[in-house]
Length: 173
Image (cartoon, rainbow, N blue to C red; front, side):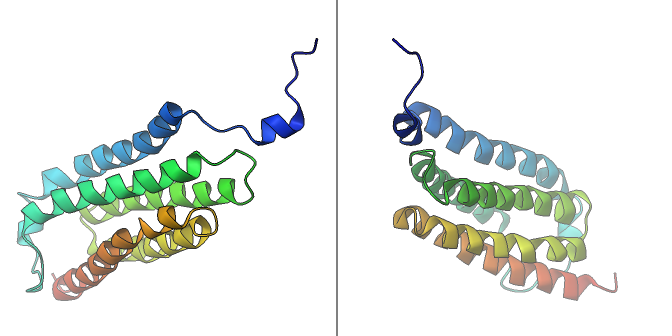
């Protein structure tokens, strides 16, 4: 008797729900915690010194919005992770998804950590593009996983306008 798994069985292998759940949640929790570490010290110090547009939301809005977005992102990633490992396009979709998470963190580190609205603007544009690419790559695999990313696109689009406005209003400072 052989210990080898037939190729057809290996190709249809799925992650357990628990492992997929951990793999979906851990990256968003890590990005959230590291992003908060770069952001929170600047909220009472540097951020209030910036001139902001009238549509800038109050600070208390950001926490609930990001918590909701991270949850939706993780649910979408979970759905893709639960597909068989050999599913055509799964690896690429998850790679781009994780790239946009890295750019999410990079934006917090550049805008807040480096106190650079211009640098933040240079990061947020490709960040937004990778979210859109994630949706395009998720869609053929799982339409719900793709649709769960649209609130994220809406928020990051708004954040892009806000970032650009803050840079413009403070460019001479």
